[in-house]
Image (cartoon, rainbow, N blue to C red; front, top):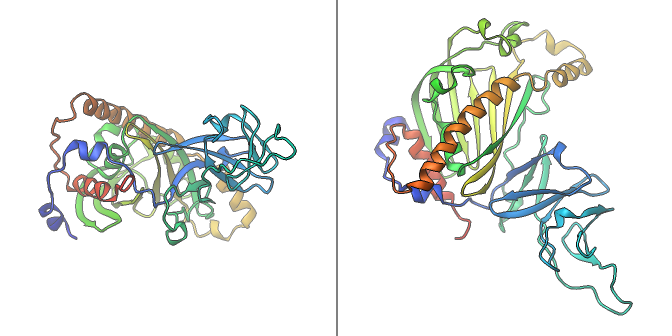
Length: 356
């Protein structure tokens, strides 16, 4: 669908219908980085559902409902014993499937309780833990994935986003390239102009033309991330896509950014923003030994941290104000001129199947 068609489909959407809607549970969400899950219980929340993560003796990640069915306390307060998760209160133990298979004070002829907590489909992929909270077929839908994560031609930086707002505020911010003047000190582009917009059942794709501050075409180009004086504006296409429930953006040939979502509730969102700098332009580098290229990739991990964290901090300040304004005056109308935002809002509402 081109831009004219998208404009013609703009329809009024009430703030309450967007800022309070739930998620589609039959999708893969990111709940943690791989490095965050060790041999101790980790508590996470995905849309009001408390979940505990841990690694079993094989190093495989296990995801269980964070609730002991005995007295309804958090299992994440307990500890890992082999492959089992032990409750801190009475020592009941649960296996990887969520079944209670040991009670320390059980009498000789007394049977184990038949209670069971939910075990969630979970995958460890590209440096992150992906979880499927729905009742649908988790194998029929593939996680988005990050093909650049292990690729030797891409340098990664990760920023954790703790957003005090509904996830719709964050995705609208990411899809709207007209707020660049907010990021004068950190912005990677300027003068964005929306050229085309396409909608489908599961995604929104917007193409902007923009002026990029970076060109990674010489061996010293990576230094532009550290020294703003070296940056020069030049035209580049800027693609942004909401591939429900996550976000992807590319700026020319040099940069790709993902935002992986973990909506917590109506007023809190956790996300991971991953920035990739491409080294594809350096053909000589690709001929060097694999070990050296991997060493270089690992050594440069986080090279855009200041830039990324600065962008996140400034955006979060605005989103916090948006959320507070909605809570105080939910009926106040917002005047939206970017059709991308309307398309995103429409998709969010269409995908809300949490209690349907």
